[in-house]
Image (cartoon, rainbow, N blue to C red; front, side, top):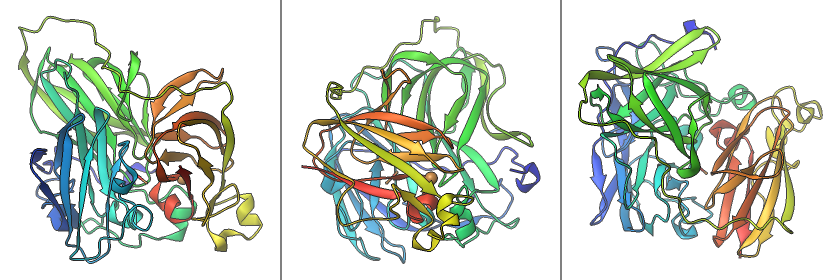
Length: 439
Ligand code: C2O
Ligand code: CU
């Protein structure tokens, strides 16, 4: 990326979504909105949003409590809402044509579920998502622990990019084949949106919930001014907190950090680019917390997940193929779909595999392309396996670099039909998707 391509960010006014808490039925309305994406004073942008804002409202629910939400579709395309990372029942997963009917313009659909896992999640449109998410149809979804960690501030940091003209118009052309065959649709303006927008004190302990909500861009992020540890990935607590070394978030990935504020003036979020550091956003620091005494960063309480039985797993390989400069291109197969898994582009009538409920699978995900991919499995979390085969962190989206492979182990214990796709949404639109069934 060329730094020149990026408009400069200067203390932009962050959009102000509000919080809704789950008790009675809530309504989430998709509709056109005008949003201040560019810095305050610059023109606003015509987007899509939920309940009047993009990102949509922060949805909060307590672990295990009933979440009851009616989705009203007031945009001029069919849509549906996917609750990314939640291991909920299949009928609530929000994939039109697979788990529910399309919610047509003017229509509605009621989602009712209990989120089994505490942590940081998000929701987004799951129809024409490379367009609808780029246009703003997403928001954070927080599932609170029964006993949350002791912090002074719980802050959501959504990282996004947009492709905008200088006068703030969002470029269309969401199905651009050149984008799809390369890294997807990359924006020319990026920001970290912090919610709620509130100053913190030096010495405060904070929880930062980073979410990469961009359609296609991988964000490496450097955070200056904190002293903390990573405590969860993709919502799932780590067994032991880890040092914050290099943070890299593929689209849809989340990272939770517990940290003490070490800076006197500001926490900054910086995206290191080839053209130099690009500032995504900041949290102002004012004053000093003199009452909190320093304690080690605790691990978060584990969610209940089944442990993979690695003694005799189902073994599968999922090979990513296609894109620019690929064999698939040289063979002239791109007209059948730019991207493929195991030679197959797009959805098929039969699933990649049918699992019996509770079966463990080890899937070798092989990236035989020139581009990185972030592969997401619906309805489950899986362990990334370390090179020595040991169970690593639980994730719902795994980033695999070109020429690399990653083994994952998953207990397929959630019945239904589940998508598995690249979360670079332009790649997904261009065929990098499949599905599995758990019976
Ligand atoms: Cu977050 Cu199938 O998606
Ligand atoms: Cu991809």
